[in-house]
Image (cartoon, rainbow, N blue to C red; front, side, top):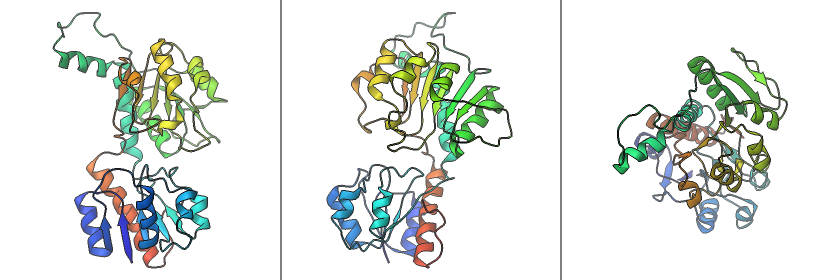
Length: 316
């Protein structure tokens, strides 16, 4: 069984992959080209795609009788894969849920603190050599403790963020989800996106990517937010209308934003980078050695089950 890993992984995951499979590990960290995806489908039994590897209907059409029978995605999000088209081509798809939850929730809290306390702006001031020393009204931000947070999307990651906000910062929690959640802490389910946007001090997006959530946070939602509110995105870049967000930040319509993902990633608009009231991270959500290794092992567990003809642990 030939396996293609589309990116370099941690040393322990690569060692296991080489020990268990006939594996080729792509050395590039860039997204796969159409030609590379075509080769993957016709030359390998299993392919591990990841963020940005756009296995869409057009790619599947280039390989009408693919050798590949499993796309073992590295990551919980799989909106870069047309799952229906994959299934139609006889290819199963898996992902890596659970492994990413706590690390992604931690990055959400990092961005909440960075945005509310103006940490990015402060660091830039120090690095510029222009800091004049402490004074009582320097870079006054907002206290997070006791504030009202709204979580848009209350799956594993949304709940992990909410728990940190409630137990760690004593925040009031509201959430938007398709159904009510059974939680071990108090949280209010919002009736609509506009309602939750208007009510909270911090709005956090934790929804999957894809057509249903594209530009979920648009100009209307941003207009509904309070002028002292902060927007945090650890979901997918396209969940936010980036142009509308830039306009809202430029106009001081909201106090700030914290972003780990971008609409046209890895491209980040110069207008966004020029703003002081936005904290920008390079998609660090799951970037710890432990988490990336756990994700890699989940990929290999899915591949091992497939090779043994067993039930896939994480089908999408």
